[in-house]
Image (cartoon, rainbow, N blue to C red; front, side, top):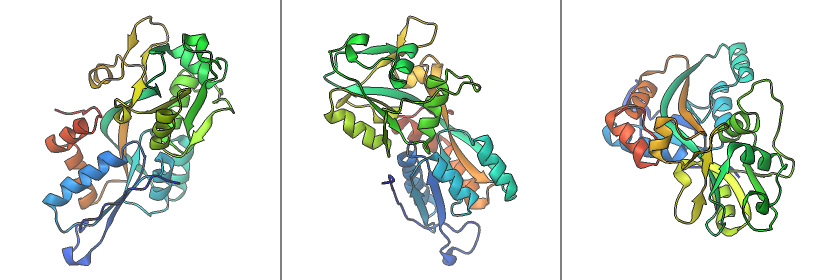
Length: 280
């Protein structure tokens, strides 16, 4: 089931407020909660608005923009070449806005004795070259691998930057033994109750009910924790930008909303929801 978050308030999109035209925002589960908070705060300033915020994955957002069923797509990855080509075929041009930064946290159960992994170990685990926790300093237990589904921007980013080592010519894939989960929340919930599970989620899911591992870069012996400071400085190796997309230049309401996301208040909300602001 898709993670679905709906929020309604009113927004005219530059038309008469009495028209009740709704602005739809769809896409990444990673930032759906962030965008919902933006929508709530935006509506306090524009009480004529009607905004719907829906998750389902970055691929879902791009498809909705392609099919004209949303005004803004949320994404935790850039549009892929095939998505851009499909858009061009329909005379759609994706316009990209970076609105924050995120670090992908690698989570384990809080009772797991493992505290850190190298990027090579992490890659080998998700390719099932390492299958037992004892191989990385843990108990003699099989590692349960959890991954997002393939339409997720989080899945694509992890595959490109960890599994494929950032090499676009690399065709390596997740192990078939990986359990594909429908949302980051589903990964969190499974790790919370399964002492042998390991998965990756947005940094906003870190709390005291699970353990986030420190990760070293490919050629480094320094293990770095996924904190706001370490993502912003570039020290944490699994970091990424967060995006909003429109079809060409946004209309008045979409532009106003994006401007709000980049405003001082909007970027403060980014920090409050455990992402990394790109503006002070």
